[in-house]
Image 1 (cartoon, rainbow, N blue to C red):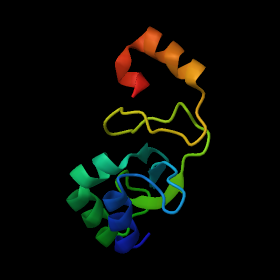
Image 2 (cartoon, rainbow, N blue to C red):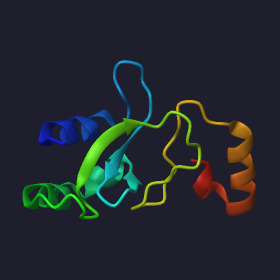
Image 3 (cartoon, rainbow, N blue to C red):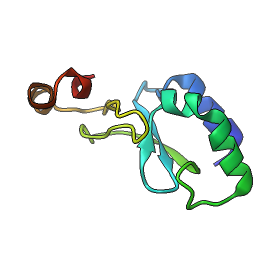
Image 4 (tube, one colour):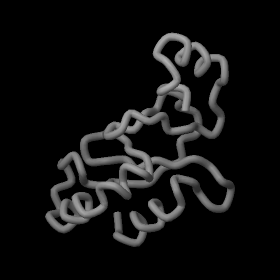
Length: 104
């Protein structure tokens, strides 16, 4: 991943253009983070990119559109990463069980 791609992802607020689809950042450990977590940890991510260790937790691999995973949460903050085609029923159930934090 190039620095410009990372910066574009952060500036977009986690939304693809064109189309307005929700995006996430895939990290070197296989976890995903949202654009806010990427912005908050930008310096750490850039340092990891300079080191080039693709297995590092903070190494960004790719930006991807979250098409259908309505259970995708940011590994850093725990915020829900919206999916393009999420099921409202499942999210209502999660909110009832775990509280509003999972219903964002």
